[in-house]
Amino acid sequence: MIFKTVVFVYLPDDVHAVPAGTLTLNQVGNEISSKFVYGSRYTKRTNAIELDPVSLQFKAIFRRLDEEIVPRNNLHLFGAFRDATPDSWGRRVIEKQFHATQLPEIEYIKHSFDDRVGALDFRDTPTSEARKFPFNRVLNLSYILDCANKIDHDEPVPDDVLRMFNFGSSMGGARPKAVVE
Image (cartoon, rainbow, N blue to C red):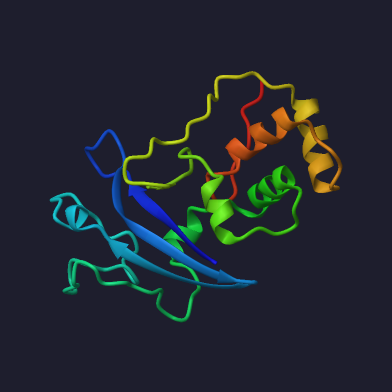
């Protein structure tokens, strides 16, 4: 199964994220391979950055505009992109939404939002809007803890709570999942 997503990056002095290139994932069972192609307009920007200074160089190394780059050291996914995907808790929440125990890697990328830590975002097309979530909500801590416990024990959870946890799952790495008062 082949999946493609456009990688956006928030650059210094830019208000909005700009498309940097296309990430292609090929997943057969649990085996994943990936490749990335920088967009020609992106690499011509004066403030463009290399998304991964090890595997995704374009400033110090001459690359053809359509060159497909693969991760170094036999990795299945570039480190910068893996860091931008949900952590294990975020993955469990997304799996709960789909009533699944494991999803293709692209599903975790597609169901995260642009509020993640870091400068990367993943979208369907170069003109797609960022997926946003309103965070200005006061949440009941005991209710949130009860729902988190239910997710942990694979028990049913209301859909609105799953959506709330999912929106907090996209930031990557360990972090708070909700703001409570």
